[in-house]
Amino acid sequence: MTTVRSVADALDRIRGPATTVTTYGPERDEALHAFLERFDVELHHERLPVPADAGYLTVRRGGEYRGSVPAPVFADAVDPPRGAPWSPEVRESGYGDLGTLLAGARFTSLARPHLLATSREIEDRAFRVGRGTLYAGFQSLSAYRAQLPVYERLVAETDLTVHVYGTADWTPPATEGVTVHTGTSGRETSGDGDAAADEPGAADELGTFWFVAFDGGDDDSMACALVAVEVGDGAYRGAWTYDPALVREFAAYLDATYGADDLEQSSDSSEQNG
Image (cartoon, rainbow, N blue to C red; front, side):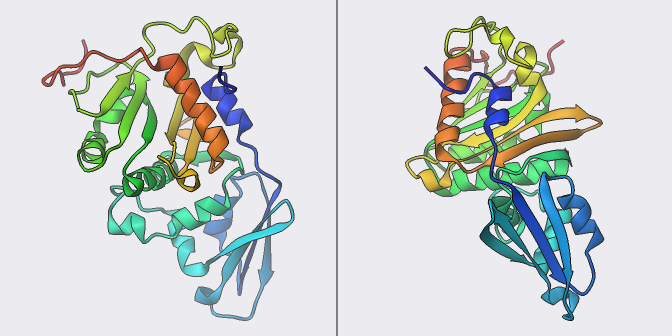
């Protein structure tokens, strides 16, 4: 029996303590503040007589100091790198450091580039650990098409098991180590036996939610998950978490609900479905 009852429920359970972000520097960085205002945080700026590149921000959660990020990272927050997860631009970016501090704070409207950057940080964790299970919901399998080279390398160079989810608007080529799930076999009940239709968004959750989760392998400190729902015009609301217990429950829900529902593939079945 799993505690998480749907993808929507997993998102609802990603709740961190009240978060306060304070930026410090000669002037408020308007682009950075516009980005941070998309999160459920209390946002402040304190003027300091220092050069702009000597500024920084701090994050407190539940009144407790969690960490700081220097001003050179601010540009990555506004326009994060979105290359392959193992690329130097992703590895050396400070976007992941800021993302770690914002974990549990809900965002109300982030665009695809920021979600892709967060997904890359999760994929990079999985690649570095090299074992365990990675779950990736693309909404539609055609969206997975552009990421196929990344996922082929993930399974070719590691011992990862990968599960991909999305509505069946394209048939991916068979990739050893990757199982594709479309939800087409039906979802009669949720993990605890209650009607799945009772959960918000359950009728078409694979087409509704963008999610990426890594169970950490055998390292709980590396477990993480992003869950987001499209709210229109390519904007998403959602949150990410580094809570290993919640990540395990979310993974258990996906395994229990879609584990037997894999898309039959052949090595040459890469044409768009008619």
